[in-house]
Amino acid sequence: MAASRSTILRLINASQHTACPCHSPSHSHTHSGQMNALSQLRTFATPVKTVEKEYAFEVAASNLRFGDGVTAEVGMDLKNMKARKVGVFTDPNVAKLVAMKTAIASLESQSDLPFEVFDQVVAEPTEESWRTAIAWARKHDFSHILAVGGGSVIDTAKAANLFSVYKDADLMDFINAPVGKGLPIAQSLLPLIAVPTTAGTGSETTGTAILDITSRSFKTGIANRAMKPVLGIVDTHNTESCPTAVHISAGLDVLFHSMESYTAIPYTERTPRPANPILRPAYQGSNPVADIFSLWALRTTVKYLPRIAKNREDTEARRQMLLASSFAGIGFGNAGVHLCHGMSYPISGLNKKGPKYKHPGYVTDLPIIPHGISVALTGPAVFQFTAPSSPDRHRQALAIFTNKNETDPSILSVPDRDIGAHLYEAIARFLDGLGVPRGLKAVGYTTSDLHRLVEGTLPQRRVLDLAPGIGDVVGSDGREHLAKILEQSMEY
Image (tube, rainbow, N blue to C red; front, top):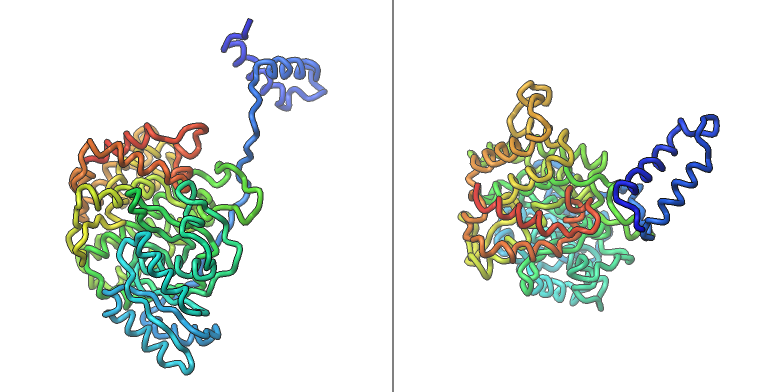
């Protein structure tokens, strides 16, 4: 007769208890008693393959240079690197702005420093736009790469760099699994310098590059430390021309980079442990180093992003947001992001065929839910869901959003079970103050779209596997939780 569930549980408890110090040989319970209990357990057990959890984390980030006007040094940097020929990437809008003009003047100031410019990077890159940039890079024998622009430009330059070294590789060879093969990068890439013109993606610090897989109506990308720039030049002058809408969307990306990386599952809970260090993912789970950068970026963004929304000429706010962007980049570049970003990829991707929402303030004729907006739409519901996993961390976030000290009685008195609901309201109020659309319904989605949004999120395993309540639950893909979060995000 099979043992009852209660019998099995009692045996489990007994076997666990016999391992404690009180059952050492000097105590009355014998070793044979332990073995008998364990033998009975084995009778009921189903053999399983042991999956070892991670035991280490790595810290990787680009060298960074901050300063007003430091873009003018980039020509000297490339000359110091003994560049033979430079491939410069930008987009049609940035090509007309001070950042690009300064970079070109700096290159031209150096003798014997040839360069070619690719100025056709598109906002929200796609497979097609990446392939165009890659084909251009492969035609030239570049020794170094320079990217001047926002995250789309820097990410495109990273991809062009990778595939100009791996000349025979297909795009899907390195795209994150399970969408692509997710192959490791074993060869050295060309030195890349990134000059960001927005305070948002933090792409100047990371080895991550994102694109829109239009055939599947969601975004994904490549995440590998080998792709990170050798230098990020962070220049306050380069965000002077940013429209307010771009400042806000980019700043929201900083906000949720920091929130998600700080609340990701701990790196010690990630499975499986890599068999070789080259296989250790860039997104590793929260860890002590990433925590410092993420928490600072969160505090800074909550303080200064509303100031930029009111006055984009606030120099101090722009300077602090650039710092926050890079700090959050170091945080999430080593810890990873989770649910807000995972769901943002189909929210942005499906928009092109579905709602065709076009966010005000963006210079484009195409439908666009800017990345930061797409991430923010699910923010309140996401952190209500993740709060039970680490109440103390979510309590810290609540204190930051409500501009209170963590020891304030109004923060300490909130029971752990209610932290999520309070944080939901605090994030929603913050987004309202920035004029963010109030949920998926406000950008044109309906409940009939929820299934497709869930299906578009499920392949985003590199981020979902870091989500508390999903990535740390064995045997679950999180489908039911995703559906509920997206439903709660329809409006708030």
